[in-house]
Image (cartoon, rainbow, N blue to C red; front, side):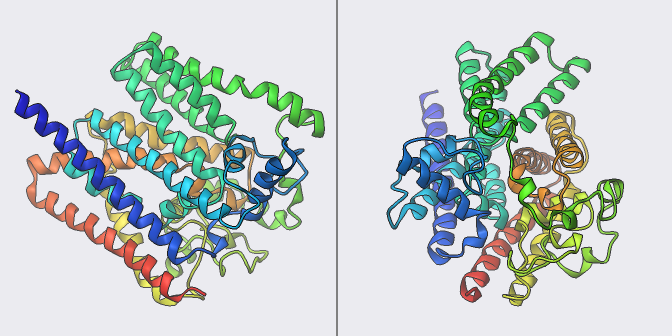
Length: 437
């Protein structure tokens, strides 16, 4: 018995060492080889100014005192601890983003462990998803998205931890994480709403008791309520709005508006791969980085919602064709491997049905948010809903586990697919690293 326990402990330690090492190699390689390419971080200048203001003035800026100062303050309060006025401040904050990415990956590990998925399958699946360009961009960036999405993974893991092992202290942790989350980025409310909808459906289908569902939802709700004093005393006091934003500063936003460029029904309901743009470019953003904006709607996204989700979750909104056309072949390979993988996990096995529901409802909630609130094309971006990696990890790992027991040929083919996908991601990055200015 002691030998079994010792073997299990050693296996877990080896897994953690391997996971951390692989992630550090991938992320540090990206930062070191492309240290000055700011286009991988959205509005980085505004985020840096926010951190510097806090460090210099010892107070929070007004919502419109800078380009990004409408954002909640938690991320910038952390950043200002890392010498915003000194040379290596940006580098230090990007190292923090790597740590947030590690939190997300460990959350994925915790969640997959609840489904008794072996560490050997977990490491392959996590290697595949952590090496995608969009994931690396997100968790090496100077942007509050990195902390927000790191917390999103942890919040999902804690929710599941309470479901499997209900302890009161877990609810306290969930409340703290929820409050920390909304003080990092407002749109984490979308995640909380999604969790609530999933739990409501589970109650209706008698998959979970209503008492358990309420115990998980209440800390999330109370965490959101902690934001009210800040919104009233800070946002409303200076702007007359509880949710200040910078949308009114877009001089060319009408060209990005889904409602005036084809309509919402066309964008959200049209099937993917049905427009010419789907087949001419693997990327979502039809331009050279952010430098050449145009009054064409597809310059910020693919022309259908699902295609935009797919491409931004692989490459972000960037296009490298004009700068590094040799990277396109690896981008196409990456894209088609992801499509094949999604087809293989698209059915609904009973043991992971909750993750299928969570994935679908996440996309539905996100689509409704865009449709009725942030109805511009560049809102369709992976960095706002990166928590969908968690159900994708669980579904992929579950498929591999099932095939390993029942269909060894398919299992081997999926292992080859994921391995080739990892190499395609790495070769894509290496091509960019050697060719980008």
